[in-house]
Length: 269
Ligand SMILES: Cc1cc2nc3c(=O)[nH]c(=O)nc-3n(C[C@H](O)[C@H](O)[C@H](O)COP(=O)(O)O)c2cc1C
Image (tube, rainbow, N blue to C red; front, side, top):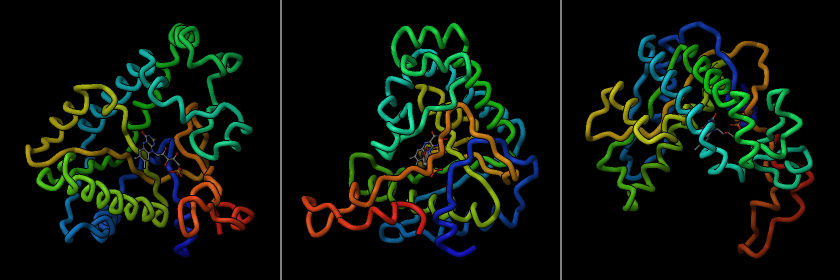
């Protein structure tokens, strides 16, 4: 693919993957592109653990699904992140950021505007929505042929020091290289973040992966080859929506938004 097509087609994959194993050649390429990223003083603070063992994947899937059910039924997830949810195309157009919450289970649709209120939460719990979503999440992770854990060297990742920022920045660059390459390989990728939301559950994953004391597990992703047809799930973690250039680019100084670029839109060239 042309480079810019790859960049503008990169996305988060919400749905299931094909059951095919990710070839060793592709796994190796994904690791090599990640390591080609820039890093402070060429420190290369990233480490990766490739997980194909079914038992480990099933256990991570169970932890992920249960974590999602827990944070959604307790309301902590919605409380923490509600500022990112949009309930209508008009609201999305106004912000041009966040995620469009338009795929609620049919039973909940009449109550869309109330899902973040205490009565909406109790209705969701009565209808067992957190359980359903958690189970969907478990299945998605369980059906992934490859998980990739991303780790940082703790001697670089020091959250209270500048090197902490530099190492996270470098890891982001490495992940973007990997993410872009999935497009070229016909693969999809998605963050498995719910275990981080529940104190103790991330530690369980670190134990499963035998993370040593000198490394910190920063993220887990699910990867696989994507089927031709994909359906949007109840919570769509992917969005093509982007701010207009005048909303995020300044000219000369931060008091002057860039003008004249919005017509071309912020996404495809
Ligand atoms: C730091 C970070 C955290 C993210 N967390 C999640 C997540 O927990 N679950 C998920 O499915 N996607 C997650 N994403 C993906 C975003 O939801 C996604 O990038 C965004 O909605 C734009 O969609 P796109 O990637 O398809 O362009 C995350 C992305 C980043 C960079």
